[in-house]
Image 1: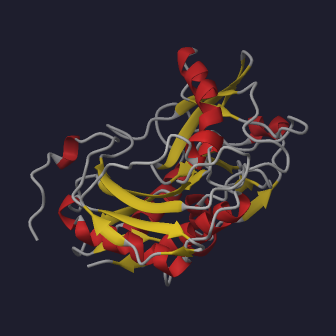
Image 2: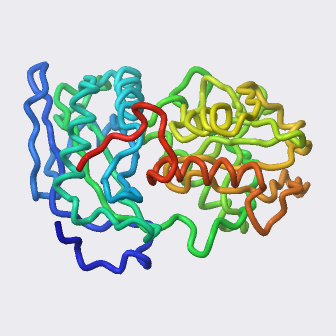
Length: 341
């Protein structure tokens, strides 16, 4: 298979139209068989449920070329399960989890020429999503839905290496108590846009959201979970019912325990104890881990001992081990890599 003529080392983290995408329609209480299509345009009613009441959910995962030349995806079954949870919360029909994994595989295979070569630093990003498509004027769930998967090659999230970022403690709440913070709904990201634009205007890279009930506990950022390292090399991740259960974070927890022999605590993290940690990172699909060098709380700076030049040593080991697994350099736990071709 011949790869597309793309300057893989210099593409950014953005959208590039590829050849095929997957589409399945829900109507009269059931999903159709699904198909691949070249058409990247969607035509829906002006009164579609997604446009009126934001009834939409999505996932994000990647396909990689491994060191030995295989094309694989990373833990797509976990994305399928999380999307099913999101659908139930928004009263949307669950797209069968086995069909989700199959749709991802079909989309990758149909666009194999866009999967960046090993060593380029680039990957193929996949976006499965679902939305209410029929007219809905009263406040109620839609009756018809579309499940789709598209993909786009993306460059490395960090050009020139992962330099630690500076984040601020936000005055906004990311999610309501007992709300939708634990699912991957478009509405969660829409409400974070003003906060992130404001943070960027003030010179910060991201926001730290505290728990909405007491504003004393660390939750997450707009699109990533937190990961902390204590001064005695213990891994600590915040636990809350209103943060998204990151697949990357859960994978890093396993890597910490089983590959690096580190002690891990998944628990509530008080903001008051953040100043005592040695390292801090944000974990998610796009960057795996974004190192944090400084947190600013209304003018008061918390500077981590790991500094502003590079990842902390434990964070770096976690990053290198997980990316090594994803790229086939390190043996993966059973079921983590789904081979496409």
